[in-house]
Length: 153
Length: 153
Length: 82
Length: 82
Image (cartoon, rainbow over all chains, first blue to last red; front, side, top):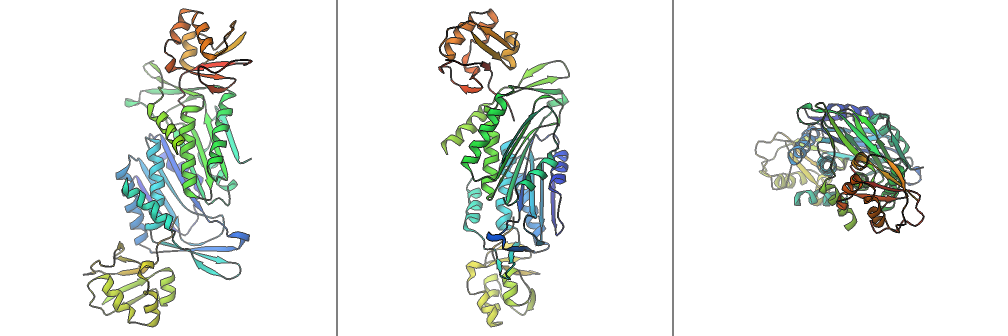
């Protein structure tokens, strides 16, 4: 299948995934990948991040987002990997990859997938600090705005 | 140095490069990569592609493009690898990678690097077919248009 | 009977990740009104609906969405994936 | 004396990748006029300047760019990298 969705607690090997994706997408010409990494807080205060998700709905939402991208652009292949559970600073949280005959389609669709999954896939991030403070990460207005921009196009 | 430019005839290992780049860019949060692959011609007619370049000027042009991206966006790191010489169908021609604290900056700057190097880095592609026909690849009007769009922003 | 699920800070503040409640609500919004009667914690959690998202059978929906024969209704804050 | 370099189909049609010519041209455009006198192949190659790009000392320039003390002037078609 040309859509590959994985929701997992385990780490993934970004390089191995990108290589496998590019190989599977042969003939596509343009391959774009995006990777999101856990950023530390100021003064190295972050002990870890916890990502909660909604099993079942997560996979459905990511599949819908990927299908929408494939309808909207001429794509050979889409990959989304998203982790949940406890993640340390610098851990890779997620990745998307797109392959297309056209570079603009590969870029735009990867950007689109990110905007959609940020605000429409059921994941919630919590920051746990060394000092014991715990904060749920707030959704950003700019993320909703980015999403709205795709609807206008 | 946070700008890494390589012009080479040898193949590169995309996955290993993406992994090394993401590791070196730790703290950046968002990593985008683009890879360009040699596409076959209809009816599997392409024997190989030949890429000619202008040694010296190529490295200068790519460095300038990377510096411009770093001035324009908040980037932690930029990588450009571009091959020259004989490349078979499905071979990876080049890659760019960008790392930023912000995902939009990582996407836009990678897109920008591609648009600039397509039309401003001294590479020329030639298609050699199995039937002996040889064609220099024509520059596309859309590539110049994509470049002009960045100047307007 | 309706199966209700909570995620993230809603789960923490309601104090459970799921509960089954007796409700004849016909929309998500009506169900919210019923839920607010359950406890002070429930009432507080649902006091600002702009901070709450709902899913019916794992599809994101608006508050006026019918719940008809839904198997599972979930409430959670705006998502923060990626 | 000016060192001139050619790339891609310009190189193939001129028949060499570099040559040194005696020219007192003060701009790239004037140098092109001198080059067109060199041979029929040269004349043909430079007949449509819209299809030609120029670099002076490895910097992309316009046809009216001065060549002053340039070490190397290159001509080539629009680039097709990436």
